[in-house]
Image (cartoon, rainbow over all chains, first blue to last red; front, side, top):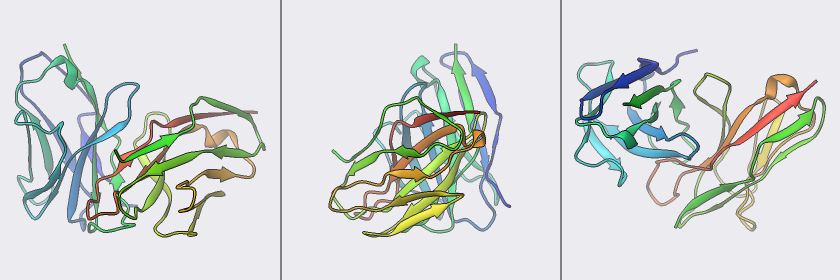
Length: 115
Length: 113
């Protein structure tokens, strides 16, 4: 069964450094998402992406964050200048299209640790 | 604001016990509702879903019914197994043209032999 893959599984970065989290969505999916889960808290929506544009973004997704589909298979989340509070599990997801009842398929996540 | 509330965990059950994990939601629109499961060391997997009132989602012996009158989507299973040990997340869309998922905090289930 096709799946969403994320790399790396664990990323350790010094505060203030840039970090790029990578995702390969399921190949026939058109909508891509990033969520994050700070330890002990809820899974929170960050951003959705379709047709090379951001569709929606949350308040968390400020100017420090950006997303990109650099080629036909990868979808990346960049954090420009990391803060301690960016430490979290980051999940990528994809769906065939966006609509009520359309399931989002998640990767296993990247654990980001900011020192 | 719009939210999803799940029962607090952790929940510990003996094998073959009956499981209920409560989930209620608020939403401005008419949302779709989901249960996701996260096994240790893995990502979120869709367990089941429902898109309209009185719909019942089911998968792997789990069931949940979309109750609009009580704004609930409780997860049930008649006989749990050790392999069901995981964290269960209730989630919804807004139902108002936004398809981002809003999640509950998750309920950790441990099933002991």
